[in-house]
Length: 166
Image 1: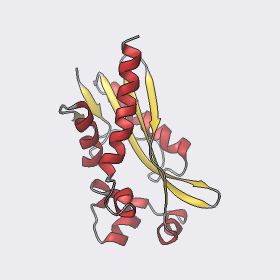
Image 2: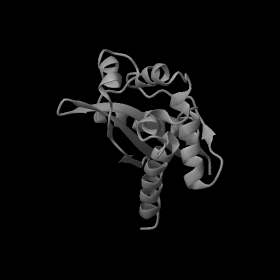
Image 3: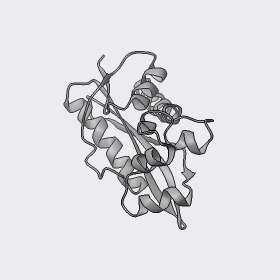
Image 4: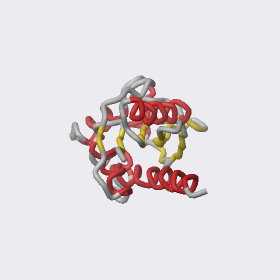
């Protein structure tokens, strides 16, 4: 079975490989949403588009993992969504952790800057989005980006197995 992740981001690839305990193919596929998704809906759509694109490009199972931000009650939150698609047309979705972004990070994002770029400047690490990510920084290392996505992958693959065994 050919399993793919719709990204070259090492944190996303690692999350799927850790949960499935096998090597997966990474695919450079479009999210079909803005570079900085700005709502749960847009972030979820990006994940779905990536998962479906993996199937279109020959995978039997495709994972799309997307990070974004969403606003609630005047606070900007980090959000993340995942989708799993299969050749039969099934698409499953799951969402993960949310954490409020500090004002000094939220303000430039609201002004149109990508969170990854803001975090790279904030941490002086241009590769922060492929490692700890914002979640790792703002949880003081308690939860890294790949671990955050692992929870989503577990929910996706668990749903998939549940429906396969019915």
